[in-house]
Each structure stands twice: as C-alpha cells, then as structure tokens.
Length: 208
Length: 208
DNA sequence: ATTAATATACCCATTAGCGGGTATGGCTTT
DNA sequence: AAAGCCATACCCGCTAATGGGTATATTAAT
Image (cartoon, rainbow over all chains, first blue to last red; front, top):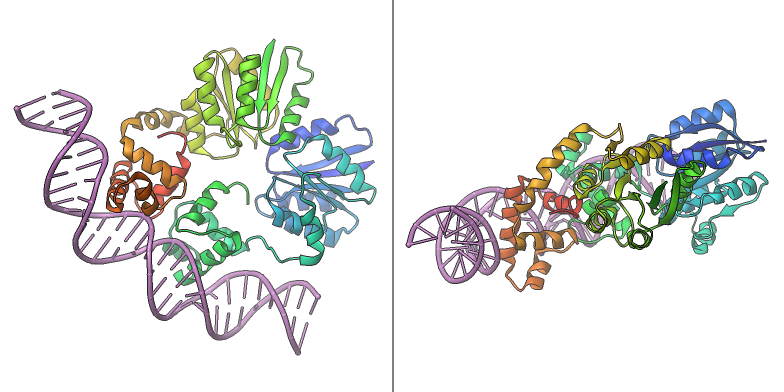
C-alpha cells in the first residue's frame, strides 16, 4: 500500500487526482493540503510514502517543504508538480531532494506512473522537461536561483501598484534598499525597460 | 444530452474534469483543447451546448474566444474558469457573455453544478467570488466610449511594453503628442502614479 | 453655426525607475 | 576558512513618465 499526500493550491486539481487514484487498490491518499504548512502537518502526522507537491503555494512553498520533509523523513519520495517554463524551480526541487517531476500541461495519468516509479526508488521526470535542465542540475547546482523572500515580497507589492517609496515605508527599510532589490530582480529575471518589472509582477502574479 | 467542450492549458486539469464527468450519462465531452484557437475549431465543428474555458491560454485567450463563440453561436453557454481574484478577468468574461464562472481553488464537483445550471439557462458564479465584482460589471462596460480611438491605440501599445518614444515613431507623431494622450487617459480613467497606466493596460487588455 | 471633443504639438517642472557602482554585516554551504 | 548569497544602504547619473499649463486645426455633434 502506497500512502500519498498531495499539496496543491488548486483544489480542483487535487480532486482530479483523487478521482484518478480512486480505484487503485494499492494506493491510498492519506491527506491533501492547499498550502505548504498544512502539508508539513500531514506528513508529520501520517508519514506518507510519496508526496506530490506544487511549487508555488501559500505560506511555505514546495521547495522549502521538500527540504524540510527530506530532512525529517529521508525515505519519503517527493514528486514536484508545476507549470511549464519554471526551469529554475525544477532544478531547485531536484536539488532539494525530489525524485520526480510532473508538468501540469501533461496528461493526468502521468501522476500514476510517477507515483509507482518513485515509490520503487526510481526517478520520473516529465518528458516535456528539457533534459538540459536535469543534467545541468548536477553541474550548476544553484547557479540560477529563484527570487529570495524579500524580493518576492517586494515583487508582490509592485504588482499591487505600490511605489518603491511606499514599499520602503511598509517594510521599514530605506528606499535605496527597495530599489536595489528591484535592480537585482531585473537582473535575475533578464528584464529590461521601465515598466517591465511591473508587467512581470502582474502577469506572473499567480505563477511564482 | 449536454455536449461539452473544454479549453484549458493544463491537460492534467482537463483529465480531472473528464474523470468527473465520465459517469454522467446525460453529459458528453465532445472535445478538449489546450488553447483558444483549438477551442474555436471544436466549437465550429461540433457545436457544444456548454463550453468551459480557462482565461489565460495560448494563442487566443478565453475572453476573446468567448466573444467569438457568442457571436457565432449565441445559444452556447459559456463557463469561465480561472484562478483566484482576477477581478478584471471575471468582469470581462461576464461582459463577453459567460453565464458561469468557477475558480480553480474550488472543489471539482462545482463543475458539474455549473454545467447543469447554465444549461438550464441560469447563471452560476463561484461562491468565493466577491459579489461586488459581479454588480460592478455594469459600470465597467459602460466606460467603452471613454477613450478615443487614438487613445485606445496608444494604450494597447503601452500594454505591449512600448515606450512613448517608440509609440510616437510607430504612429508618425511627436513624442509630446503621445505623452499628451497618456495624460488625458490618466485623467479620464482617474489614475495616479507612474506605472498605473501600464497596469491598467495590462489588466484590461481585453476590453477598452 | 456654435459647441464639444479630438489630435496635434509645445512649454515648464518634478519624480520614479533604472543602470552602474561600492560597502558591510549576517548567514549558509562547502 | 573561504566562498557565496542575502539584506541592508548609499553614491552618481540618466531617461521616461507624470502633473500642470497653452495653442491650433480638424472633426462630430447639437
């Protein structure tokens, strides 16, 4: 019997996976969560064999949750689950200890294949992931990092229409610090031009 | 028999919905698509009674697709499907002719309720949507005559990330003219602050 | 025909955002 | 111990965007 925990902020997708696994007699879903903290509680309480987790989640993101779970329960297998075009995230998930990775663009049946494979100790990476990213992970390890905590906070506020001045006031830091974070994000994200960080924030608001 | 078409760029979610509707004898999925153009082809060919469509999709987005479908097949019921709190998008979907709206955060079973309701001619809005957005729709759509033709053109280009300089070059006018139009739009729309016109353009990109 | 809105174009001034730097202390990883 | 990232904060300079005017010719509406 494989015990599964699922974390994903879109309940509809969790429900879909539940429907898929309903008639698999050797698989049992022991808990579902809509954010990272809830996932951690479930894992500590019910000790699943396999965890399927989204990356972008409220409170604690999937990468952070993966690190913590692997620290406490190294035997637990973890499958990452996210949208396309998040190469850095994929690399980070694998670096954090995930042995499987699925894309939401792919058919749902892949979930079943992935669960079985990682449970047997294998690795399962979605075929739509550019193999480069997987091999690069070994060599580059952590060259490309996601945005830091402060940067995410600031980016969120930018998306809410706040100016650097307002953000500085809300965070009790100086304006120059906020502006520095802006510049660093622009560099990291490879953007250029005046409003592009704002655009990024608005358009990717739900994806990072 | 209710004939359904589904458009959603995450195949896994489509598969989940298919699993949900599998045993509903009076509902049949006649086609699924991962982008708007594919959806339009399916609708034209198979004429579904109900269409479920995501907003953020490649090629043609859900709002544009909804407008076109309602134009060609006014009898077709359309249910929007998106993530949390995209107020602008929700309003524009309803303005485009959708009579139902679901959030991905909600349980999948809602899909079934929504399909049945809209098929009978009713409206079905996810209970997690702030009712304000639904009533505000009326006022939003009345603002159509607010911006002039040139202003709309310029606003569109702003949304594409172009600077006043670039816009002026493309329109064969002086930069000061473009800037004047910007200021007039800001005044008309009651905006204030540096990036707000860009934000307006990005968020309302489907309807002005 | 007069009014209203539009499109064009300029003036002034201010500021927010961005592109470069530099620096320091804290923290984690190796 | 060294390397690296992070958060903090400053420097200089530049440009685009905004806020506030004025002006004129064209077009649309009354």
